[in-house]
Length: 609
Ligand code: F6R
Image (tube, rainbow, N blue to C red; front, side, top):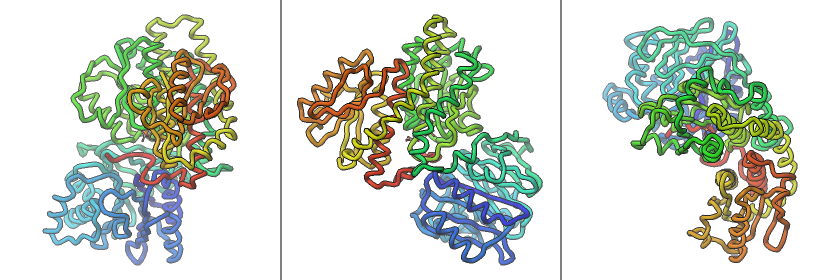
């Protein structure tokens, strides 16, 4: 999705803007641009393609300035062309970069055309530039003109604005899209994502919905959605610069797959220290959990699959009903609501629009308590929730989610056990065995990572196929779904997942010798059932690729290939079995030569509908 940066400093901010945009590249984009204030006026460089191409163009003209804004664009309104790339400029005086979608842009466009403004792009953003320009004529105040303009917009925006005759300030505003201000020493920054300001400062102020801010080198002035002056807290970001660098790896996805033992250990630290206590989820969690009669989990994509896995734990261990729903569906339906159902949103980024809107909808429908499990400190969804659990996976840059998924599973398992304990459904021996299982989890995940050479050989065969089927049962069915999603999003191979018991109700018709069938088959209570489902596949000529553990007692035979983890890890087995399906997708993508970290048509943070 689009990325926004802005900077005001006594030094040349062009390298800072470009560095910030480079760090936003992972979000997905198709063009980039910057505008800076020089003695010549507002100078702008835009390019379709990579930030590097825009950087080369900026360096060629030796662009240097103390104030400027920049953008990476992921096309929504209008094609991928240079005229549609941001920043957009109104009458050489106002320049704007924008994330989000302006819903009333057509009406505004008509109005601005009638006022004599000319449009040079097909974007919804250009109306913002002209509207601010329009108000700037009467107010001569960039902040005030921005405030008046955004109050007339409907839709979602995070904008950063500069004016030709305002070398001492920038303005910015947000609604529905994240925006923060990075506070330096005698210099300040604006960005849609903390990674863009980290090389300059760790001190960040997250803006809230409806906020408009005036940002100078020394000061920041904020008003809220009711136009009242307000203070926003200053936080110290815990994102490390190292997590934003590739290091010895070829891709961020590869790095992040291999970081999982550490991501899990880091997330586990507080759990092992405190035990299964509600405090892990926030100060008020103990009293709130007492009232809980069920759970409603809302999420998208991979996070949704983490929720589906959790349903087995919540119902099986905590004995509470658990509904899991895709956020983009939930937000638009008249869902039945029990106020005492705890709403749990799962989001790596904390800014997925559908999940944020589903959370809002759940509150409107009367749910009393909301919990966010999230990987990005201070992002929109945890800020809108009563309770928060932060996974400590570190920045996830690859578009395909990996370490965020396994740490979400860890958080959800902990939630299930904590609720069970609070409901007095947990005896001491079981509690100890769960703590032990958690303690061993990073090691078991490392064992699974050690299977990489064998998985690579399989991946080379998958790379030549056009379709694949993933099967699992019970708590491993969501892992089959996740395996299919990973494969399709980064290799573009068509993949589907089914609970193995569903095969004979339709999908078995797809099975022939050209259909590789991946089966997640650890030694759990459904193993015998899975084995007979596998027979159904073999009998139709399907080739089986089985992820099992030593205790499943599978061996290679004709048409059956087996990779085994050393031992069965019990209740946390889905976390361990997530690793081989991630590695399979990664190596199949390498063999096919696709852009692993930035798969076509996808973006990391989905901040639009
Ligand atoms: C798939 C993937 C997506 C995200 C989904 C939700 O690999 O990464 O399906 O899981 O877009 O994103 P978050 O978790 O940031 O809300």
